[in-house]
Length: 494
Image 1 (tube, one colour):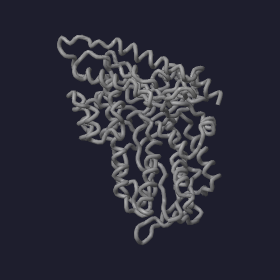
Image 2 (cartoon, helix red, strand yellow):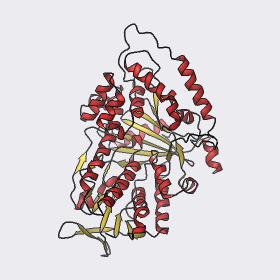
Image 3 (cartoon, rainbow, N blue to C red):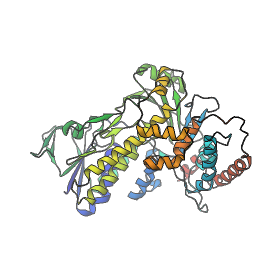
Image 4 (cartoon, rainbow, N blue to C red):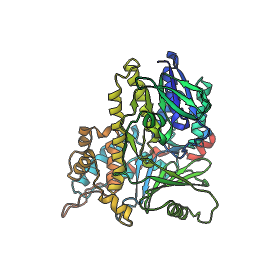
């Protein structure tokens, strides 16, 4: 087992080969990436979770090396605007938490749980986390040297530029790059993939293949016939339209997700432009209507800027690793980009494959357990995304009414909602089911509280005396934020 071929480039393909090369080049493995010049990359996912920082740290790539090359900025979290559809709940922030937040998490859990019990307690989730303060003040989550707490963060970036950066780095490190169109896949008599046959009849052999061929999934779904498990009954969105706009003088350090008539739109600030996109369901509106609504929101009705339209296949494969083939990226599945989990799933899949393959002495001994783990990761993220739509109180379009009435929920998600509304120990409920492996209790509590999903106040209940806590938390976060620089100023200086 010495030759691994990755079919497909893009960010997923080059991230994959970068991780594999880092793990196994010293063991004598050889790597090649087969990439077609005739297949454009999607190039839209331009946000990440904090997992991407771990990716760069593992490979020893400094931010000063890759961020300028990819017009990258910092991301403290995501603000969800106009999702709740309830008075008093205009927006909420989903933060990337860090060790500093341990100083206020006790207050957060106490007051949120008191409100779940019907008490008129302090429940605004935004006010408890430093990430929200930094985002509101357009600060970079890069603490001063004297500050003892490291802030957690993700990134915004030009997806095409990131793929190109990783490609050039991998080639310099000895990864073979083969530019070719694959026209045929040949199997062994046992059913494993033996070789890829290109348009000029060259044969590319390997011991193991990684399918990064996008939604087409030429190897795993096409050749090995692994079934696809659709999420369409729970997640309606299957299309997107994107439009860039000019960057502003100030540089936000957050992603903004704003609910629209038939979906939602993102606002992602890069150093050289702003990425905008409308994720919607083609069951409820066509591409022209979606583009019109996005242009209207951005003030671009008379603009000559060309929009880009995309179709999405939402769901996952039944097996991510079958025989001598692993699927990564769009070829293994896709969950709409609401929480920017695409690259996290790429990273999680490859890193867990490396562990499983090594533990099994480079055999398929641990394949079934690996597939089960990756499926659970996809399903867990799906449930968290579905919760955004199910808990929305918007009723201004058929799209939102149908989402609110949708009963295609997993047992786990039903249990989450039941535990929340019944005032049970919510953190324990998440741990009991293993749901907190995918999203923490803080994430769930910010979502549900931010959406205004709360039981009625107890009759005659007086306000809990929380003003002292509010003042202390606000002052603590204000003082802490003084240790962080302006976002654009910091990036310009790097």
